[in-house]
Length: 189
Image (cartoon, one colour):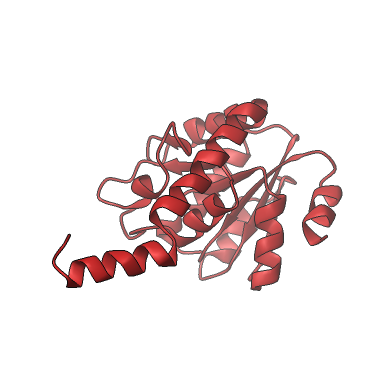
């Protein structure tokens, strides 16, 4: 019901959702810069907070597409995951070792847009051309074009979303992690 309210409030716009701490390596500034290249057909919803929140809000000034929702509880997070069309994960350094929010969005069958991050697990979690689109690190124009590509092709969004969910179920469930740990302890891996 909350997801439907979010969709209704944004009346037919393509909803892009991002969540995370507002710190440099999370790359939210690149998402905001990409938003400035997008048409009014988009809504960019950014959850979370941190030391960069005020500067991110300043950067987004004048761009009515961007909305900051602050920290969200699990119920609201679920609603935003269900409501969004595209999950944006703009992290830019290997400080982002894995991407739990990315895997979580994928479990909701959401295609993602990520940057290539040498030495990070982000591009292992979401595979470019399979579960979403991966673009050159920090390239705002390519990030915006990737969002537009997904927005313009619902079949591609659905296909990437379905593959994303499969990847999470295959590799990132608690059951899979438990089995991997057991195998490691038993010397099988």
